[in-house]
Figure 1 (tube, rainbow, N blue to C red):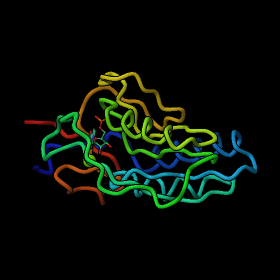
Figure 2: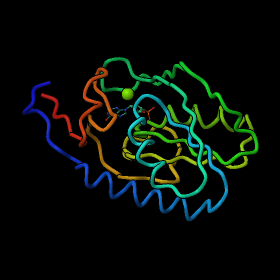
Figure 3: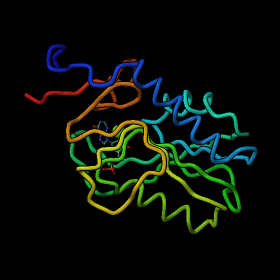
Figure 4: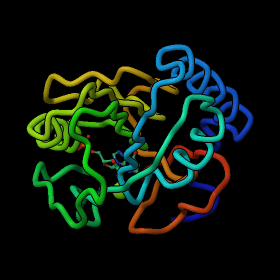
Length: 175
Ligand code: IMP
Ligand code: MG
């Protein structure tokens, strides 16, 4: 991917501003109730690290690892579970923390799996919502930034496992 084929879509400042707002919304909604934030690896690792520091409610962290993409930019619709929860979510307040919701298959799969474990509440927080691309009916409760179509990289988001370390989010112009 050539350097000139990408441009900044969301700056680090914009990302920080929206995460601060999300932290305030979550703090307002949960107050002193404890939350389990479940990060969906790998894409959400930077987001969850920044988000949890903006949440004042008591919070604990767990991670799951899912993979839906091969090496292309299109979803396969097939979700592979590579790592499950370490904590019990039964009767607890859970927020699933995603980097991006695209077709929605990944979240739908995870959401239904978690519901079976009877959490006290189950919400979804995503940094990026690509709503126009949704193929299943699933909505995030907390949304950082909404965007139209387009493949993005940086701030945890990868293309073939690369570019997760970029501090800003870039739109990849496919040539
Ligand atoms: P979904 O199942 O189609 O909603 O896909 C969700 C997952 O696909 C995300 O957690 C990302 O890992 C990946 N993904 C979707 N769109 C993008 C993108 O624009 N850049 C990088 N990864 C993406
Ligand atoms: Mg990915």
